[in-house]
Image 1: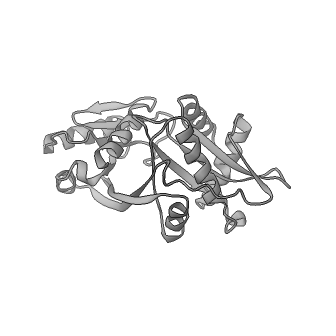
Image 2: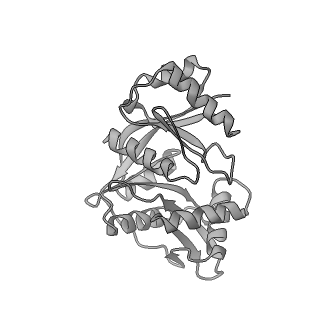
Length: 251
């Protein structure tokens, strides 16, 4: 399973607007943003990696004016962390990823007073992105590049779902899934603004996104939980802990 999840990350980064292949690494470069959470690298699972490969990867990031940063499933490159630390990288976070299959998915009822729907216009997308920013304690606005990025994700087969307050018409949160690769897709960006929390919305649209993936013949959905609260939400709808991932970057 680890190799399959890691390969899905390789495929996702290869679909970025300007991906770079540097030896055993794929750098997912997006010219529209310098956000390290979008512009990062990952190793091809099982590929041999040397210190020279790491140095070349760092140079490739520098040539793009991007911060050298990686996310990957630890078991698929067991010696890589040591090479990265020796090259001056610093561990950001260690996560456990969770997977869901059609057999484990549980779909809760949509909370009363809300509807779930796919954003179909740039106005919808901007509202959903702004709500996600609020959920992650960010600025409550969406840039044109972010709207374009979500539109591009949907056009390539990715999924986005937003919750809408039926009384006010306001977006109450949302999330997305990347275009599936080899029957596998990552669910990400699950966020609910503080004013709408504790109502079951995150569970509802996480399950809805996952169900839409399975309806399109995706076999495995996976995600990462940022803390105990989100962990409980994801387990409630059928996600189960499966493997370890590492976030690491060069200062």
